[in-house]
Image (cartoon, rainbow, N blue to C red; front, side, top):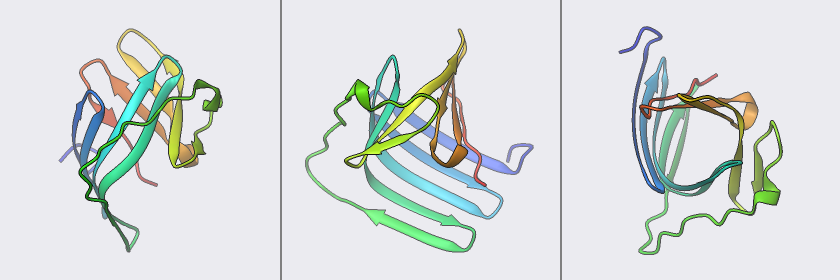
Length: 124
């Protein structure tokens, strides 16, 4: 358990992301595909998600034999805000340095990616 009562395990390979996170009374577990470019990251289909947040259980399971990575249309990136277009989420780069990239999430969230691949996300 970290100092802010959060446990997060992230396995991210080229194009695939697996997350398990517990923070306070919020639990999130998911598997999804993504793609990147210089403008940011795009998220495609979530193949599994279970989230218990503020007393509400959200469950999604999409078992399929065909996994497709999202196509990037760079025109769909909007500076300083996430954008959803045809079920594809666009998270633009807010800032970057030698050791960190910050992406603009939805609903005011920020996604921090560090050179050592540690991700920090805070539930509200």
